[in-house]
Amino acid sequence: MEKLSLKSGIVKDIIIVVIGIAIIWIGLRVAFGTENPFYVVSSGSMIPNLQIFDVIVVQGHVTFDQLKIGDIIVFNRPDGHDKVIVHRVAEILNQDPRVIRTKGDANPGSIPGTDFPITKNDYIGKVVYVVPQIGYVTRILTPPINYIIIAVIVGIMLVKQFGKPKSGDILSDKDKTDSDESGTDKSLSSDKSYLTNDTDPVETNTNSESQNKDSDK
Image 1 (cartoon, one colour):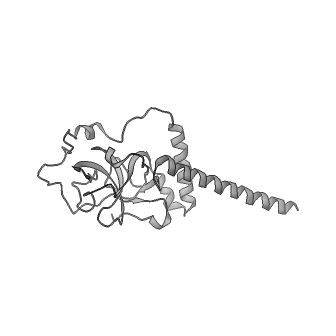
Image 2 (tube, one colour):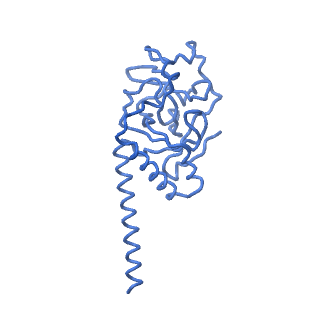
Image 3 (spheres, helix red, strand yellow):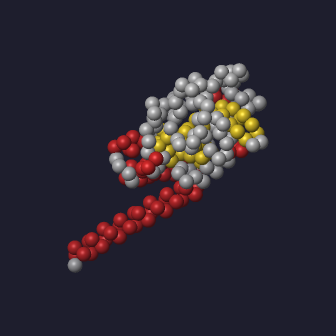
């Protein structure tokens, strides 16, 4: 009887933990307005602002129309939707319908078919928080344990930050001064010489095993 009671207690605890994790996950998805609020950076074209294995928290409640020059966003690669990319908004190409161009901070230029043209249908969300290097967990442990640990760590850090005044977007002072009122990035030339096919985008690993891919770098 004691063994049976012990087994029943263990099963009950497991069920409680599973339900608790499910509630937390659903709550995070609702709070951040996106199907997957966490991504792991898997290549280096956003260095030094984003490092490989950083975990980024994405806010889907920031609409596509609210984006401005300098915002770091996550989006599906417009040419095929075959990769999830995280790059910085570099230019508003058109207002109605809105079309934007992005660029990796470490890349010399924007990549056609990857950085532009980006529309509302490609957009996933804006990066609002970065947790350095905990993406290493995805290499050490197997799903779903790794994602549970990441969710717990990120959740704790977000709770600790809750209620504190916002420190601003993930932008350096130089990034902010590089934009002008016309919606273009002064760091890029006006003769469209920013175009390049030779650089790689920052890809991200999503919070599911089927989408956990390394970058091509």
